[in-house]
Image 1 (cartoon, rainbow, N blue to C red):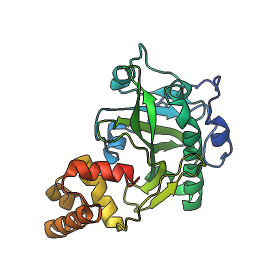
Image 2 (cartoon, helix red, strand yellow):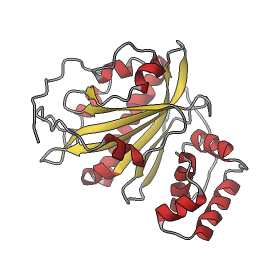
Image 3 (tube, helix red, strand yellow):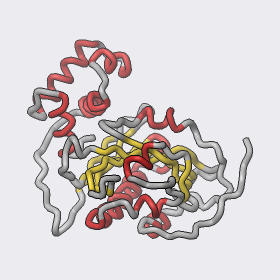
Image 4 (cartoon, one colour):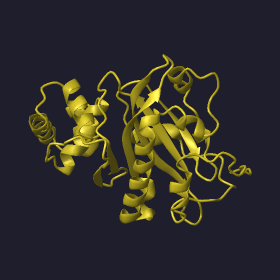
Length: 265
């Protein structure tokens, strides 16, 4: 596999200090492998409930690659952003503090779990971004780590942003770290701010119900969920019935909206 030298960072951004505080997690290797794992394979473990795009971040210098073409259309950009700072500039100014804290909370939680499991953990939260219409709309952000160096430090990550304005305009200010690739981790963290106080009702979903909820939000049928999780169709429909009951919903559209507003997906 051919390698090439990657330029050192020239544009610090608001997440730089937070990431630099975790040198045991993030690589400063500027000779990264140029071909990341298949992006399509990676985002197969994510879900999109509306228009979405993705891009790959080279963690050593925060440059971007492998852009999904919808990024230009959704934000009204003339060229694909080359640096993470350009993406951050699209975020609503009032949400920047939350994004910074969300990244810090994510790294702290992954550290507690163990950075050796980093490739099998996904983080997600919501914030507003500027769109091609010139306004700000709610986006659902998911990040998954895709490549490490020989020392076990993160080289690349894939971010996927989904416009969920058509589902909800409410931000739960909840940060999730969940397991993928066979891991069942589920860590829900509430952002604490003096100006943002959103009471969250207690919803006692089991880990299996959380897993099925995410698949339902992706559009999976009960039959496909049963096959994917290798459980019976009857067990799947029982879980689905319990999920709808606990979230007090009758339709899948209501379920997705409720789950987003409660920070469950």
